[in-house]
Length: 430
Image 1 (cartoon, one colour):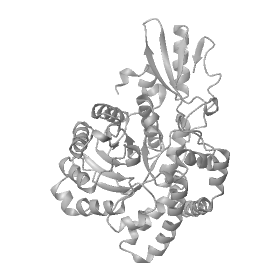
Image 2 (cartoon, one colour):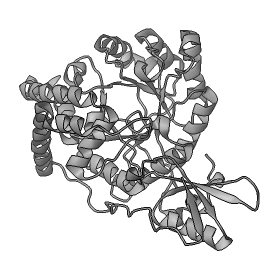
Image 3 (cartoon, rainbow, N blue to C red):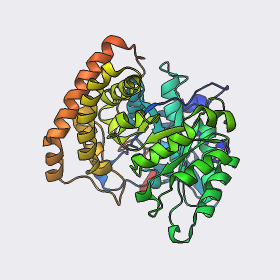
């Protein structure tokens, strides 16, 4: 999205601190474990997680609103129905908490993915995606992670809108995009139409595109290995696939066709930093998939146990050529597989609840998604698989602290309440 569509306080880098790339930086897409980061929202307890409509009563009130919004990194979009009655949508995305979590994951060695399913991409306004990408880029750059790539979910219903959102994400600082199959008209889409969708998006995108195969979120459409390989061969701007279908056989077949030297030679990528990666969508087959030349995974449980996931991924890659580490890799895989399965049954709300228990932030998802009931929270927190995973995470974090230096500083302070942050002559309606 052009910054001209944003209010000046968001379009001006110095005023917001939400930076976009000022010069080309090489941020290679490398094998490993990526975490789809949740989006955190403000005013959780108000039972309204959507946008507030702000009506400044005077030019001075409008200026004060912009100043307050800039100071707190809130996302504000000006929309004027009439020249004399400007109003603003005030999005309740909690940028400081989001940045804190991004930095925590980067320090653990996890890859960063924004606005995926765990990030409730379907519930985000386009302006919010842009602000999240900018916020992530800023906190990474400010803390020594200038070369850490950002992957952003940009897939929506139409090819046209997907291309537009992908360009917005790229302008905001995303290095790669992950695009889910358009599933609203699933019954009308055959494979040629789906293939044409991905090829059109990849051709128009300024950044490499990753295919996201998630039947549960795309009308039941489940891309097979043939179409995925075909798309990868025909577009040199396709940089990989995430298989949240959980089909290990499919992963093996795709790796057999793409994770081999002949593929890179015969079908070179447009961007030298973006090889074709084959990534699982669950943490329960990271180890076995590595023996089929897979490149890691994108997993929601990485938000809860990032150090354990990073260690498992590294051991899995090493075990392919060093059988001495295989027993330890199997031990970690056993614990993580059980924990991943247990937590996934509680959905996005379950992951956010665990983050609240562990780190003090999490909150509710946007409706129609709901918080867990108290009974479900207690059930999840008491589960033996969760306990085992958290114990493993503690030990892996301790081990990492002895062997891996991390960036320090720059963690944003928790946000203040929205209440009382507006001038007296600004009226607010939910």
